[in-house]
Length: 310
Length: 267
Ligand SMILES: Nc1ncnc2c1ncn2[C@@H]1O[C@H](COP(=O)(O)OP(=O)(O)OP(=O)(O)O)[C@@H](O)[C@H]1O
Ligand SMILES: [Mg+2]
Image (cartoon, rainbow over the protein chains, first blue to last red):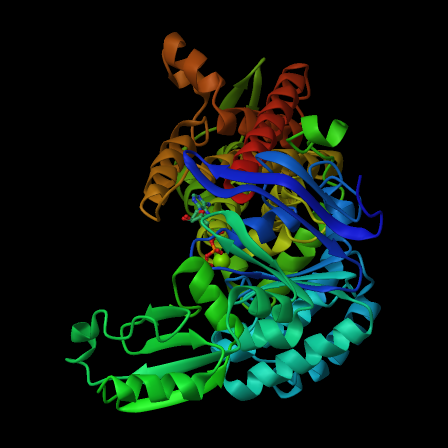
C-alpha cells in the first residue's frame, strides 16, 4: 500500500481537542534521508502534527507509523531513534548547559562516559562551549535554541523533528543552524521541520506541504509549488498610505492576480516591466515599484490568504 | 489492521525511573541546603519535647503491660514523621514546581523515559530523601540510647523506607490535582493535625473509642505504630497490618499519579 522505505506514513491522520479539530485527516509520507517541511499560518496544526509524530500526543483517528511502528504501542522504541526540537524550549532550568546534555544522554540509556563525550562534541557543534558551566537561565533566547538543537542530537537520531527551529534567532545564528542542519542531512539524517520563514523552507526542504485550517492545501517541492501557484514575476507597488484604499478597481486587468496587503499591492504577472508601464499609463504614481521573482511567500499568500510571518 | 484499532498506549513497567533520580541528584548538587533544612525539625522536637518535656512525664504504657520512657515513646514517632516530611516536601512543593513551572517532564517524555518512569522516578527520589532523614534520625536515637536492640534500628530504617514510599506516592498523586501554590497550604493544614494527633506525643488510648477507631486508619498513625513496635521491641502481628496498609497506600498513590500525569502530559 505504501513505500516500505517511508520513515513516516500518515493516512487520514486526525487530532481533536474536544470539539476543536487541530489536524483534519491529512495524508503524507516522508522518505528516508528527505528534508520535509510543514508551512502554515498560526493555528494550522503544525505543532499538533509534530507532537503526534514525536509520540507525545495520542492520535485521535487515522493511521500513523514512524519507522513502520505504531507510536501508541512502540513509543519508547520510536523515541529512542528520534531527535526533537519542540516549538517552546523545554530545557532543564535547574541544571547547567552541559548537565542538560549529560542527563539527556542518560534518558537515552547512554553511559555517563559516552554522554560526556557527546555533550562536549555537541557543545562545540552549536558553539556553546564557553557557556557549558552556566545555568540555562543565563543564556540568551538564541543560545537556548541552539542548546535545544544540541540536546536533540545527543542520541544520534535517524529522524530529527524541528518545530520552528530558528524562530527568535539572529541572522548569524540562523545561518549557523541552517549549516548544521544541512550537514546532518548530508549524513543521512531525515529532517521534518515547521517554519514561518520561506527562505528557510526553500533552503532546507526537498518537499513541503502547506497546512491551512487543519488540512493540506498543497504539496510539492518549493520549485513545483512556485510554478504551480504563482506567476513568473511579481510587481510590488507601494502607494502613499491614504491613496491605497482609493485604488479600488484601477489596477484591474493589468495582472493575472492582484493581492492588496496593508502596506503594498502585489501584481502577479509573467512580465513585471510591462505591468509597471501599464500602471503608469493609467496615471497612477506608486512611491516605489519593484519587480521580483515569485517566492514561496507568494504561494503561501495565494493558498492561505495570509502572509507567512504574521 | 491493528494499528487502526489500538489508540491508547499500554501502561508500561517503569524501568527507566532511575534516570529521573539521577536528574534530581544532579539538580540538588546546586542547592543541597534545601535537603538539610527539612531534617532538623523532628530532631529539635526530640530534644525539646522528648527530653525537655519528657523529664516531667513518668513512663508511658504502650499496652500489654509494657512501659517505656517518654523519650523512647516519642522518638519513633518523630522518626516516622521525619520520613513523612522528607517524602511529602519533595513530592509536593518540588514536584509541583517541576510539573507546573519548569516543565521538566515535557522534555523527559520526549525520550525513551516514559510518563510512568517519570512518576515512579519522582516517588523513588522522594523516598530517598525521606530515608536520608530517617537514617540520620535513627543514628541520633541510637546515640541517645533510645532503641531497644540494634535489629530494631535496622528494621526501623526499612520501615521508614516504606513510610516514605506511601507518603511520596500520596503526595505525588495529590500534587497532580493542584493548580496553584496556595493549594500547598492545604497540605500544610493536613500535615499539622497528623503530626499532633497520630499518637505522636501521647498513646492512642487517651482518645474515646470512636476517635481511636478513626485515628487508627490514618497513615501517620500506622507509620508511627510500625516504627514504635520495632524500636521498642514490641513485635506482633499488628505490625503486619501497618506494612500492608502502607504498601497499599503507596501502590494506589503511584497508580493515581501515573494516570493523572499521562492525562496531563500526553495531550
Ligand atoms: N493542548 C491543546 N488543547 C486544546 N487545543 C489545542 C491544544 N494544542 C493545540 N490546540 C489547538 O489546535 C490548533 C492547532 O494548533 P497548533 O499548535 O498545532 O498550530 P500551529 O500550526 O503549530 O501554530 P503556530 O504557527 O502558531 O505554532 C489551534 O487551534 C490550537 O488552539
Ligand atoms: Mg506551532
